[in-house]
Length: 175
Image (tube, rainbow, N blue to C red; front, side, top):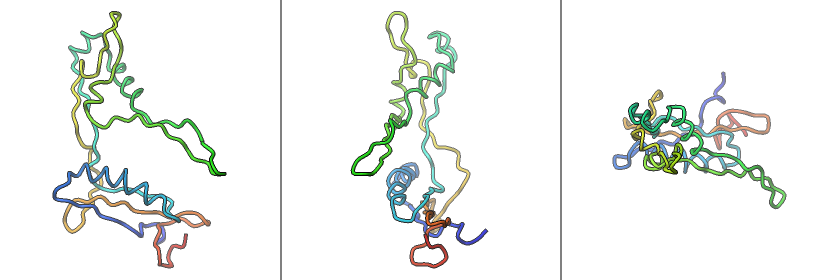
């Protein structure tokens, strides 16, 4: 293992006013894509923070009453919460990967997801058979900056036969 395999650039996001889950979203969905587009950056990772997630808690009695299984419930959520690619788009001699996103962003969207339709044409929704709670993913890596919880996007370089973490202006990793 060499020093080229360690991050060479890191940012810490901290706030007393912005929730930790929102800082994680800023690091992941705003900063990470921008850093990935920098010349010489091969990979950006976000460490630490509280990653938001949703918990679906089924009510067994309501599942039986609606003739819905847990598998039906999971399949409905999986089917309506996806990112897919229609393929590559060519423009001005460049290829672009197209993405179609249908991800949910709040509990109300999950609650409104249709699991099935009854023979009478009435939709059975997730909210009819389960509670949806906002939560955070279990934390396994703790990152702090100046004693405060932080998010740290870090950039890794690649290309020209070199791999390692990008360190602009330093000779230990030329990408």
